[in-house]
Length: 332
Image: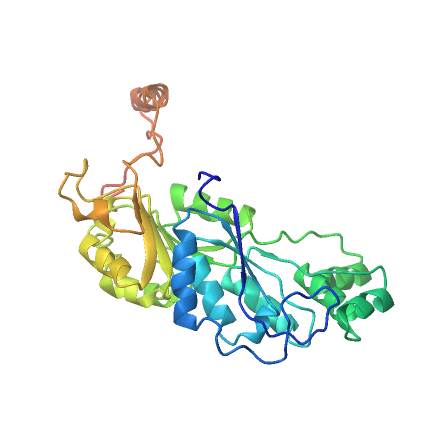
């Protein structure tokens, strides 16, 4: 991004409405929204324009952004199009624990709460409304899960709970050597990830409907070819995202293109494709939202390949089962 031409930070004062009476307010805050504020659809178009700058930080503020009934729709759209989305709500009765949880679930990266005094008297005097200091403190406590740590203190339990890096749920198709590692590592960095394979008791369409991101790490067999098709994409939540690091034939590419172009899916990252190398006329090249990489998710070096070959050869010479053997009955 060229910072001479594009912003690093965009702050949208999404509404003039606010229930506080702050000393420093320059927005002429009022209890009701201004009828000339942007509509939801206009807000979506504004966010599209902001995204066109590149990847600036996006901040929803006001007034009090919680005075907009469509705030969470706007936040979800902002996250969907790839903006790192933040919010600065006012410490009013609208800032409930439920609202904070909804911020997390919608994908908000950061929430900022102003503290304007060392005690309730000085803070509330600045904000013009009694009780705002206590509400600000309660909001911060809930956002950082302090209630749970207080319960642990009573239980004398010294246990950390990593803050999720995102509230998106991830479904990894395939739980073998590759898929199992993906689930494990996603969990380590705080993502809510789970695996699925053909022996899982839950129907695939059910789990697809519960996860915003789907990562395909399946072996390619007759049973898994085309597993990500129009029916699978329709089962995913609107704004979902697909990552394929397995084989191109797992995805019905025409169905994926339609799902992305229609807006049902936010996009996809395809490290593998049905036709490799991809020809110039492949329609995947030009679909906004679909990222193409040339089968580089795992590139084995000649040293690794040679070491594996030698290990397999020596095992055979000893009459032993070769490491990483393929079960031809299973197809992998």
